[in-house]
Each structure stands twice: as C-alpha cells, then as structure tokens.
Amino acid sequence: MQYVFPPPSLPAIPVVGADAAFPVRRIWCVGRNYGEHTREMGGDPASDPPIFFAKPADAVTLERTLPFPLHTNDLHHEIELAVAIGGEGVNVPVGQALDLVYGYAVALDMTRRDLQAIAKKKGQPWDLAKGFDQSCPIAPIRSVAEIGHPTEGRIALHVNGEVRQQGDIKDLIWSVPEIIAALSSFVELRPGDLILTGTPSGVGPVVAGDRLMGECEGVGRLEVAYAPRD
Ligand code: MN
Image (cartoon, rainbow, N blue to C red; front, side, top):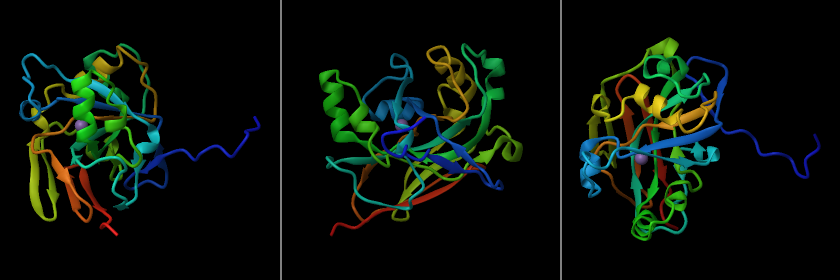
C-alpha cells in the first residue's frame, strides 16, 4: 500500500525486562470506579455505576517533561492502574478475563476538568476533556509473567513531594476481570488495547512547573513534570 504521506509511528510502551515494546491499539478508561472519587465528583456510587470513555492511542506519552496542555485553566491529575491487553475476546466471562491480560502499568488519566465540567453540564461528550495530546503519561509495563495479577496495593500520587491521591486497588468497584467482561460486551478486545481502571479520591489541579510522582505498589512508579511557564 502506498500512503499519501508517511504513516504515523505506532504508539508503544516499553516492557520491563523485555527488548520489545507493547504496541498500543486503543485506550479505554473507566470513570467512577472508586467510591470515594465518585463522591468527590458529586456522584453517588450506589446510583452512578462506573462508565467507559476513550482516549486516542497516541495520547500515550513516554516523555517525562510535558508542555502544559492547550485550552485549559484546570488540568487535573488522575493516577490509575492500567491493564495492558494481550489477548482477544468478545463477551469474555469474568472467570476467563484475566487470560487476556499481558501486563500492568501505572498511568495518568490527565483531565481538563474545566472542559469536562462544561461537557457534563451540557450533556456533551468528554473527548476534548480527556483525549487531548499527551493526556496519558505511562510508566513501563510489567508483564503478568513477572508480577502476576495485582489485586491489592497502595496507589498514590504526589505533587511536588506532597501526597494528593491515595487509595488501594482492592477498592476498585469493578475489579479488573469485571472491567474486561463488561468492556468486551461492547467491543471486541484485541492485543494492544490498554484499559485505565479509574482513579482514587484526591484528584486536583496541576500547574506549570509541577512535578508529579505516581506509584502503584507492585506495579511501578511514574514521574512527570510540567514545563514551567515561559
Ligand atoms: Mn480517570
């Protein structure tokens, strides 16, 4: 096939201990998957079950110094456990869902909260609030072969050395197998799909010059900085 211009390179994430990288096909995200976070966003976990939304695959970034995003005055951090899919399936039963998982990573679902608030108010899509350039900083993937399937462990985010978000992945409302089962009832999952599983409470603003450090026990650590204002 001839292309009218060189096709863009495939977004890919390094894998710890491997010479090969994980090519990203799509990024799915779960919203409202920790009760405390649902409440801090003004929802009720009993009546507002988790939801899915997406980011473009090239929102993934391995850069560790990022420009402050366009068109926002309220950029928020959301630290999350990411699931890297290595298998395929549709309507996957919960009991078989972990067979699709290649590995895990710690990632940030960066959010233009001001744009999201407007979208929510007007019943509009979240795409521009969630799916902007470099909106998914991510650490290297740890394979299931290396770390197994983490089901508990502290997940936290620090800004300029101060803890902002703190939770435990055992408190996910939808567990990883439940997320895979639910998502695969809407779309066929294929290798390269990445699923961000939701953020614990404590989300808040990031400004130019801030240094973010996220960690998920047993999975990894992610450090990014936003470039200072000129
Ligand atoms: Mn999120």
